Image (cartoon, rainbow, N blue to C red; front, side):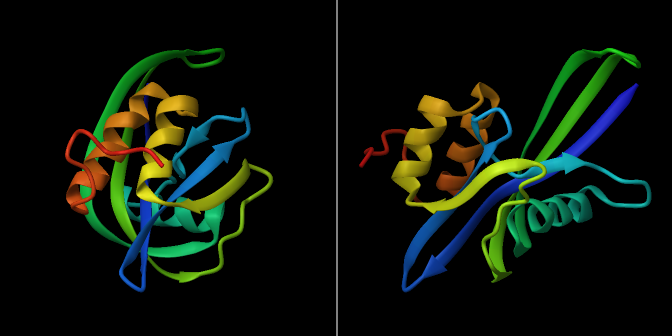
Length: 147
C-alpha cells in the first residue's frame, strides 16, 4: 500500500522580519502542518488544504523543499510505503488558529527559535526540511545562531 501526505514550512514577512510557523502535534512534538492526500487532489492542493485546516493560514507555494519516504506497518493494511511532500509556503491571509482536533498548538517563531525547537523537540526527519526552508529564505548558512 502507498500513502501520500503533504504539508509545508509556512513563513510570513512582517516589516522585513521573517517568522516561521511551527505546530505542536497531539503527541507534544514540534512539527509541521501536513496530512493525507484526498481522492482527486494534487499533492500541492493537499499541502495547502492541510495548512489551512490545521493552522488557519491561507498560503501560496513557493517551492518543493523535500520528499521524505519511509515504510511503516499499519495494524490493518500491513506494510505501507509513505511519501511526505514538504513545500515552502508563504502565508497570504488567515488568522493563526490551531485545529484542536488534530494538534495542540501553532505559533509563529523567529527562524532561530524554529531551528532550535526543531532540534530539541521535533522529529528527526523534519530537521532537513526546516534547514532547506531557511536556506531558501537566505536565513541559514549551516551555523545559525540560536537565540
